[in-house]
Length: 63
Image (tube, rainbow, N blue to C red; front, side, top):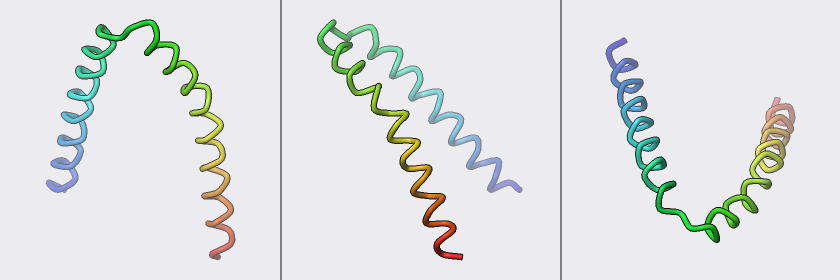
C-alpha cells in the first residue's frame, strides 16, 4: 500500500510541476507559435480515437 501512495504522490507532484511549466511557457508564446499549435491540436482527437480502435482490435485478436 505504501508503494501505491508513493507512486501516486510522485505522479501528483510531477503533474503540478508540468502544469506550472505549461503556464509559464504559455506567457512566452508568439502568435505564430499559437497558430502552429492550433493546427496540430486538431489532429489530437482523431489520433487518439485511431489509437483506441487499434488497441481494441489487438485486444480482441489476441484472445
